[in-house]
Image (cartoon, rainbow, N blue to C red; front, side, top):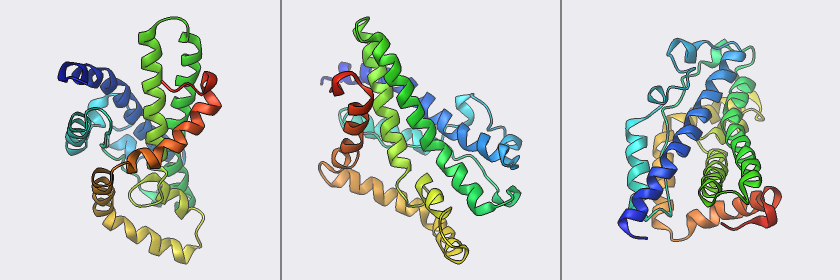
Length: 217
């Protein structure tokens, strides 16, 4: 892909990814609020305004990884919604529900994209491509966030099923979350095919279940 084609693809992907990341973080805040935690609302994070959710370094990493890989790989993040589990009746289970909300939102968006894909299948190649990109982005985001390592959402979900004593030790791992996150990024960059092998199978499963004829794009 030449530079102009790569830039065009980035301009098309960016708003789809922005919507997906904002709804992902917003879902964390709304579930926390529904369970009794007003922290996200107090910080002005229960909003669709993307500026409130953007993280400077996460955005930079996203742009660099996408353009640097020729559009075959992306890695970035939005600003995490603040959550205080002390407001929950059951802090452990509450955090599990909050954690699950993000990936479930992405998978829901993937299902919506698949439905739109069916509707536009014979209409417009442009709309078809946009639906396809929205589908792929949200399958990847949902799957990535379900990896059970801090600070990803999967670690919160796993924590909800642990005994109380084990949960306290598990929660302590959050302090190392940023280091683990960067290590995961380095592995994805350094190991050829790791990204495709990790998320490709899940993507194929969603394609088989939701897209006409398991469409391959």
